[in-house]
Amino acid sequence: MNAQAVLSPALPPVLPSPWIALQGVIRRDLRLALRRKSEWLGAVFFLVVVAALFPLAIGPEPATLHLIGPGVLWVAALLASMLSLGRLFDADHQDGSLEQLALSAAPLSWVVVAKLLAHWLVSGLPLVLLSPLLGVQFGLGSEALAMLALTLLIGTPVLSLLGAIGAALTLGVRGGGVLQSLLLLPLYVPVLVFGTGAVDAQMRGLGAEAHVSVLLALLLGCAAFSPWACAAALRLALE
Image (cartoon, rainbow, N blue to C red; front, side):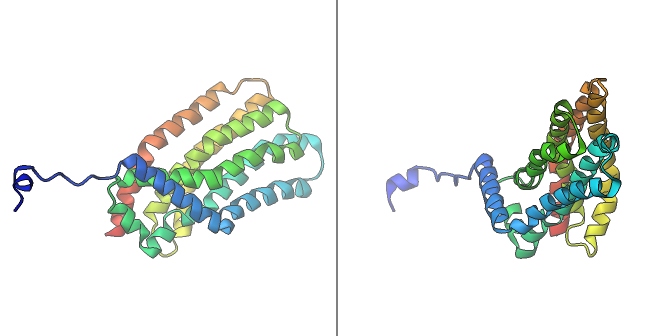
């Protein structure tokens, strides 16, 4: 036996950095989303259809459209975000990828963060970018459109973070989509109220700083709590 090998201690295996694992999961999920365009395009199509049908159903009265515009767009964005939650963990659970991710060197909460970032980029960000264009048909001014985009930019990550908890809790449950909706809709109400309230306050010239501050507080709270709650729920689902 080589004397140098005997004298030198064995080096521990080098584990990949959690940051590298996080970037890898994000790239993987983005590539899969590009292959499954129907999953995230369905949410975008839903938002466009709902926003286009409301003016046709209510009528071309500018005052009415101006009044209901923020609420309609926010409700449509909320429901559109729920459409894409069903495949957040389900596809990986069915093909066994979720078990491999849970056994990887990266903490499961980091894996959840990476999947949520990828999910928001393909399903939440398009809703934010489309909202000013759809708000034009409701007669919203430039300041109201900017506030609408800002509140959706803050609010849609909150919807994804809360929705991930519901998706993790109902993973593998028969009829999980209905149960997921029952769990999430009450949690979504504060986001909807303060999101639409900010746009309405901006249109009335009252200032929307308080509403935006509450949305930011909700975002920080959900960002701190949701990944760990999802990781715990996923471990229970995998047992």
